[in-house]
Image 1 (cartoon, rainbow, N blue to C red):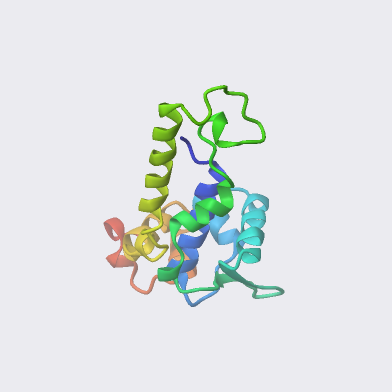
Image 2 (cartoon, rainbow, N blue to C red):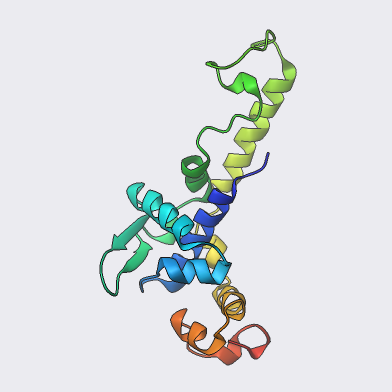
Amino acid sequence: MKLTSYSNYALRTLQMAALRHPRLTTVAMVAKAHRLSNSHITKIVHELGQAGFLETVRGRGGGFRLARPAEEISVGEVLRLTEGPIEVVECFNPTTNTCPLLGVCKLSAAINRATRAFFDVLDKVSIADISANRDALLGRLALHLPEAGPAAEAFGIEDASRLEGGKG
């Protein structure tokens, strides 16, 4: 099973919003920090906003922030939104299934249990959990921006010397 880049970027977007909370985060910040296109992040922010994960603020000085506490947003919940139904094998979809072994196949039953276990683990991991090492994450993100000084300020890093390698 491989998750889509879209899911990965959605989680990165939520993670950055958690790191900057309660301040607003912008599409440009996420795109620049992760070297992604603004249009791709805009689409993600829109979907996450529609689903109630993000609150968006329009206009000059606008951006987005978490709509719920980071502790209440699970990675599994986000992946269910961004990935849609996880159909690891064709028989998971009764509409398109052509396998004659449906209902008696031990392999599909095992894969179904594995998929449930995958989500059971990720349902217990929150956006707060993946953002807990704030200084290290912000330091790494700031290091990937061309203008490290303003980046530290933009990401809300008060003391850049505490970050990875003393750079900020």
